[in-house]
Image 1 (cartoon, rainbow, N blue to C red):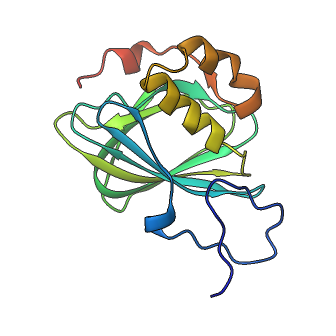
Image 2 (cartoon, rainbow, N blue to C red):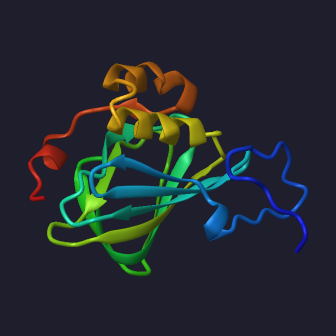
Length: 167
């Protein structure tokens, strides 16, 4: 396979194969105990992996208006809020969350998790993950994330079910 793409540059069409090698993939620490590896950011698909240490906060409650977000657990255990229910996912489990559905995710209490996360259609989200990394490093603010909601179709919400879960 001869065609590769640098993870930082979205590919404008999906007419050629996309290969992202682990050694070349951009990695972002977006919070303590959390590492995101950027894989693909195209109009049809955005994809990354997320690795969580035990006790990591994960992603807060949010929803998307234009994309389905999906999760495939590579290893460990992941709790995912779907509307007002927490679904426990284990190694090999897959979950797709349609647009408009409130959700959040984090490793199950006492567990680690390694997860493939994707969006379809793609949303050119790599700059969103970079913003999370800058917030974690103290170079940007939570307000910057809130202000980016319309750009990255990431809209925050509340959930008493999620906030009361055991971490």
